[in-house]
Every structure is written in C-alpha cells, then in structure tokens.
Length: 561
Image (cartoon, rainbow, N blue to C red):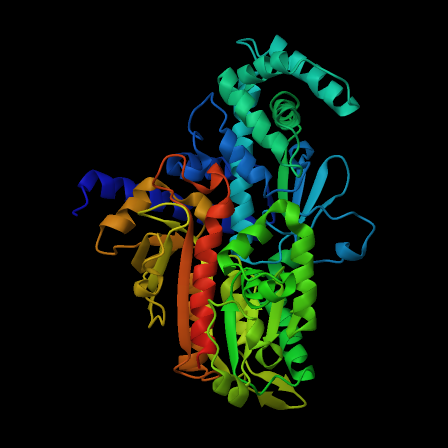
C-alpha cells in the first residue's frame, strides 16, 4: 500500500520532534539541571506537544487532563513524587546503605528515596533509555499539572470553590475521615476537565493500585506546586548528579553484573559447558521445567501457568521456586544495580520423567553435552547492549581469558504490534533502529510456522527498535508499517542485543560466529488502535498463552540438541 504524502509529512514532523526532544534531554543532562517550566523545559514541552505520543492521549487538549496516561506514569514513578518540588536523578551512590527507606515503583523497578518533604532522589542504573524514559514521564506530568492549575482558577486567577473543596477532601482523606464521594467526584471532574462518569472511572482505577496515591491527592499536589510556581516563583527543578553523568555510557553496572554471573558459573564448575542464554521473564522457564512436578499436577502447562499467574496464588509460586532451587535451578539476585535477576538451570539435575508433555528431551544430547541454560530478566532499552556486551566477553581470572561456550541466544519480549491485538506473536527477521540508518538482519531459528495453529495471529518481518515506547505516535508507526520497511512491531531492546551479539561473534570473536539466534515477541499493545496503548492496562491472562508458547518453542530447540 502506498503512503500518502500528507501521512509521510506528518511522520517526518513527528520524527523531527522526537529528535528535538532527545537533543534537548541530552543537553540538559550534560548541563546538570533545569527547570521544567523554564526556557529549556519549555522546549521539551513544545516538542512533546507537537509529537502527541499515543500513550499520553489527550496531552494537547488545553483543559482535559489525560487520566489513563497519568495512571501509567504514576505506576512508574515513585509514590509521592507529585508532592516534590525538587527531583534529583543519581547513580548508585550509597543510599542503599543509608537509613532512607527505598521506594520501588512496581512497574519500573528502581530505588527511589524521599529525602524530605520537597525532594525525591531517583536512582538511574539502567542507562540512557531509563533516563530519557523518566524525563518524558516527568514532562508529561508537568503538562497535566498546568492544566489542573488553569482549571482551578477563574479569570482573575483566583481559586475556584471546587479547588477549596478539593483541599478539604484531601485533608479528610489524609486524616481517615469520611466524605461524600459523589460530591467529591463532582468537584474533581471540574478540575480535571472531564465528565463525572470519566472521573469516577479514573478514581476507581487509581484506587485499585495500592502503589499509587489517590487521584484526589495527586490532583491537589500537582495543582498546588504548579500554582506556587506561577504565583510565588517557587520553581520546580530537575537535576542530575555528577556521578550519574560520569557513569552513563561506560557499562559501569553491566560489567559488575556480568562478572558476578561468570564468577558464579566458574564456582559451580559450569564455565566450560555449552551455554544457552535466554532473555525472558523470570518465571516462564522455571514454571515450564518445574511447575508440574512441584505441584504434583499433570495439567497442560498453559493451565498451570494461568493458575500460577493469579494474584491469590503467591504460595503456589513460592512452592514452585523452592522446588526449582532444590532441583537444578540457581538464582543470582542482582546486587549491581542493573535490576536484572539471573536464573541458571543445570540440565543434568532436571528429571525428564517429571517434565510436562509439551517439552521434548534428547537424553543422549543432555548426557553427552550437559548444557546450561542462563535466563536473564528483561533489560530496558540501551541497557540490553550494556548487559549482553559484557556477558559475552571472556571471563578474565589470574591473567587468563576464558571464553564462554555460548551455543545459542534466545530473546523473548513484549512489544507493540502494528496489525493485530494483545497476545498476538511477532517473529522478527531484522531489527531496524529508529532515527538512524542502523539495521540488523539476522537468521532467526524461529519462524511464523512454529506458532501457527494455536489461535493467535502471527506476524513475521522487520521490527523497529524505538528510542522510547512512550514517544511513539500513529503517524510514525503507520509509516513503518505501510512503507517498504513493512515493520510488524516495535520494541526497545532488539537492535541493542543484536549489536552486542554481532560485535562478539563477528568482530571480537569471543563467541561462536555461528551462534544460534532466536527472537520472538508477544504483543502487549497495539498503539495504532484507540484504547489499545500500554496506558490502557496490562495484558493480564492474555499474556499467558503466547509467553508459554514461545518459551516451549525455545526450550524444545535447546533441549532437542
């Protein structure tokens, strides 16, 4: 299908806005600090408004506060950040040894510290992508805060009665006092510029998440700080420590992380054995090997996985993990700051007779070669290059360089799909890095045929590795889908992983040049569908089927020799 000139023009404008945004963020990062509503911050806001990212919904509407987008960012920012005038981004600088209680957002794991009533420190140990991600979230938060302030004022900049009533509601909420929720929703709807029905729905969604403050609390504090800056010049500020600026881009945390893994492999006598690396969540491989035996159930693996995925079954999940740790699984919890947990599976200690029927097992191959499977939790954006690059380097000890015997590398991840829906599968044939001419074609051991006949839509083709999922809009994505790129989806790590793998195999020669590669993704969202973005909610049970289908295909190729 040809692309209309107007569509291509809009896509070009959007890409230019992304580039301006990243240039501004890099400049401010190097400078060390900026004020979100100062000249530099306004440049970021202007670029964001022109871009109109899908995940931030009605960001360009001057009155309507974007509620789904707000919940999305507050699930990824530290609780209480709406109360803080000063936000400082830092590397790991010793606060983990202090008496400050860390705040860890569940949807974006990072240590954060509330220093006092006005200041929040946020650890950035996952590279540039993490820094850019949080700066876009903060920029969006300040844009919505300005809407709340304007909605709370009359033409003479006096506070409306709705705002004064919100103050009383927040006071009662903090003191645990009763208040009429229907009346409270009515006042709040005015300040949010939304209908009563939309406001009630948003309140329930915020209340459902125990790690996020109520929307009454968030609205009040966003509006309060915005008003104090506008009327009293109490400026908000974002700053970066010198240690953070020095360490970014130097693989500081990835090197420590990889060394811990290699030392553990050496200590367990596994260093010379064939190694199969899998980047995936830290439960699907473990459950595939051990859930059936640990729970004494012969159900289909998918049914077991659904049972284990239920929030109420934490005790069952613990039972599986305890069994796994006694029967061949080793877990290396991260202490480096990467937030990437590693599991190591010694296949010689797995009982094939207790495996689910879905898994194949080549006993001769396992007995002869004794393969080891290393599962690393998801990396974030550019962190994928840092961690994989360091992991594939030889282990250096006592003046010797001992290469890892890497047989295969398998990448399973969540991605945005450009034609289909949540839970569908994408099999990439190449990764194209957004905003550059970099592209990484590769021979994928997996194909669309591996996943056919299971009731899921399967797409095969190039995938775009984007600078940040929160910055994508429909114009750019339609261009990638409909132009000669014919992209099937977007994600944040593929090109970074492939860059590290190609460097290790083709240039450094530190691993086998013909290392087997497997890539497959399942759709977490479709940003081209209204209401289908990441802000619309998690996959839930829809993610179980594709996750385990991909996991089983990868394991069967590994275990089949």
